[in-house]
Image (cartoon, rainbow over all chains, first blue to last red; front, side):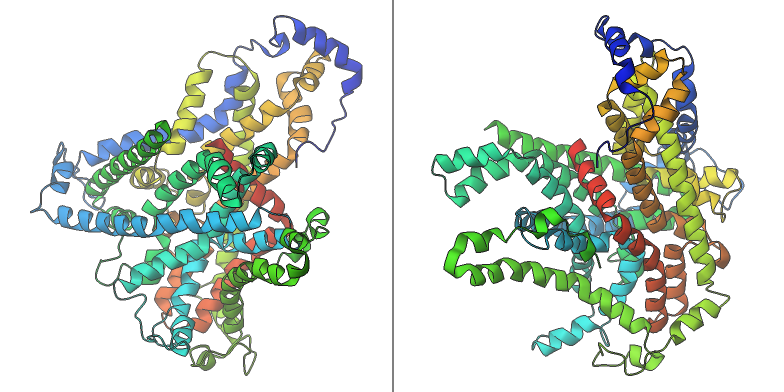
Length: 324
Length: 297
């Protein structure tokens, strides 16, 4: 995958010059001071970056300080009212927002452990040489490339409580065959979590697999020489070696689960009631359907803050344990 | 769907367990493969069933027990959704392709240009620019939704494909990914080109980019898939039937035909074809791109 093409440049002929040039002071004088050139390279990216990342991140704060109804001409400044409303149990926004935060929390807590453990097991099974290995890897990853809309629409069908395949086969196994997977809780949570695991387990497994392949073989050989059992090798070589990758997968998965939207939008439409309407779903509906953008922007910053605190706490917890 | 990707190196090797197990070889081979095959079935069977359902008649699509082989194979569902003016699926298909290709091109070009000075040149402000770009990897996209909607509205882009092409093109991942890649290239070739009198842009264009083709292809594929599959943003910024992308269109289709599963599955199949094709052809790049993204952490 790395460098396969050699450019026309006669590398050999110029080798001496390059070494001579690079030799001076360690750096590369030819690539040192260039005035405005770096900024010309950066310009196209920076235009997009400033316009659609930095500006909105700041503009959002401004919006959140106003009673910003898109459909009304006046957008009066209201200070922190949009934020205080989110912490005032008597306000409408409070009820809507925290109910959706609860939905996001439920989904995250249910889905993250499964998305950490199942892909790890899959990656461990895949981390050996055997016939068809790459084919299995390709199959497990395939649902991820389909995207959430296709996946959610197809599972909405498969989980239909009357004619869905899932209930049909459950009935065949002598289990209840009339579970309302998309219109009742807790069944809807199991459905949303199950579909998400089906959709993304290959993604996490591929990242784990790369981590496993980065663990030096010598460590296993040394452990074997020391007479370590398979379990001891797993416990003392594999798990510590996987630490950085596991933390990465955990962080990415927490963020992804906390941003769950498409599954709920297409499979349950937030049902029953607004029970499975997640925070991001609520923010989008408040801001972009009801056009209460001030309130929605405030919600998005509170959600972000909660997410950051969660990430820091998780990170800190993992740090602590390694210090023991 | 991807059996052709089996690499010769691993295909030739016997299963490790079978080799170790000696006489118990067959049994341990089964023990090794059984869970893998079961999981593969759990992944593949629903996809097959979707395809099968899209080829059924309206009645058979919702009949129980479900049939794995249609009693009557028909293209009726496809005819119906392709012919409907309220759900112009072909138009959505075109929209999705145009949007994803344009966005991928924009991501690759702007990321590559930005990554090069960050990898190779020294200039004031470099650290700040790079830190700002990396920091946005940690900004949850949710805080950008509301303000970007207003910005896009201000630019008169709402309900146009530009709204789903341009705002997501500033890819922090792209810059980070290509900067890492450029840093691994041998400096000597660029220095030789500069000494030969090429300017920095020519060096970038003729030396660095050709050497970086695998990374550029990987980034382009990931950007294409991300844009093609993007759901939340298109659902809210594209309103009229003819401006939808496929994922947003599937939502429209579902609202219009809640229980017409034959139509829904035909729509899902149409939306899947381009990405599955790309996946079959470029699976290596995609999987390696994703697995490398994990190494940044």
